[in-house]
Length: 250
Length: 276
Image (cartoon, rainbow over all chains, first blue to last red; front, top):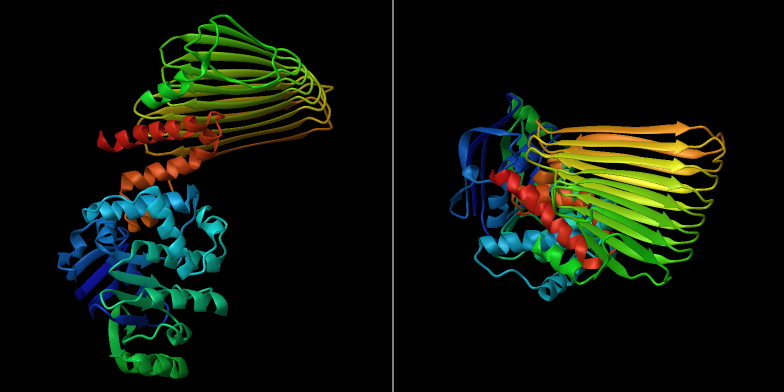
């Protein structure tokens, strides 16, 4: 589904990604871990198409398309979803209005008819249940005045609404209390199917208690320096990154 | 624009020179391109008047609100009109005004609060695009004690347009316990657009609550990125953000479907910017 080859990217002339190779297949859950500043969020942003970053080398194929030449919105419409680490507040724009536009733009891209008002409301209701998001929040302005936990739940709600092929969740667990974490993680698990894939970027093992990954990668200095199965996350939690980093830096 | 004519077409037309209201039951009325109109609300009367400007001309409107009268006033600019409104409010009268400029218009408002416990609320929006020059001038005079005024003007300027707001709140020497607020909030859509805002206070009484403020900012690039990541085009994202910015004022313009129709018209104007 996603094939990243030798990806290099810079921001303001500084090289952050230094040759990433990553293969994600349908039905898989990948976790990307690593110390602060290793390039995890940059990788997510570059895949989503954030124009702040410049790709200097490498290629990315997503569902048979050359991803790096596509606009942010076309990547989204093709089925790439990025759960933001810091979801943005959009004053005066209601969730319902925003989602209706987003859902119908994506349908248009796929050559489908827009949803009627009734169909859309039904979908909102069904999907807000996935993350136990109160219907009060969906009638409010996007993320405005939402708590940290509500913002993250709202990301997963949008993911449920848009039903992406590949979801990249950038530290969706940061700043969550244990209940919100459980709700968010359970939501992600519920949305997982054999024909979609999830990449979870996280600092902590605790999220992976709920979302069990098939593959765990460790990112360091802009490269994936180690790849293992779900037991790697447990080992990292216990022993930290030092044993890997020391070996790499040698 | 047709939709707007359709909506106001259903409202009762008011006569060409004097419009006098005695009834306490408000009924929405409309006046299209008045050159000179005098509106009188008898004590206790209520009405809702929509004034629509579509032409390049001048317009003057004199409004007198009797004691306890209630006036809902919506003024819409779709043409390059030079308009002046003079409003005098009696004791305990209530006036709510909504001004929407979607064209290079020049609108000035002189509000005199002449009876105790009068209240005036004004929400205004201007959207200046292309080479438009939009002007809103506001002069609110608290001439007697115990009156309240609250105004918020939101300006948007793109392309090479210019937006201008000047607002003065005047509080007379014996107008004690005045409560006056004025806000000017603005967004620039391009490097070549310009907005000038001049909020001013002139206070001669000592027991008053007065506040004013002005901000000029740009589009939130993070919000645009966020919306595009969900599949909206850049134009849609910008339109939605501007709708969110001015929507609260435009939507409350009294006649229900009018707010939405105006918002779509505003979006069209914004969309055109990207195609040019």
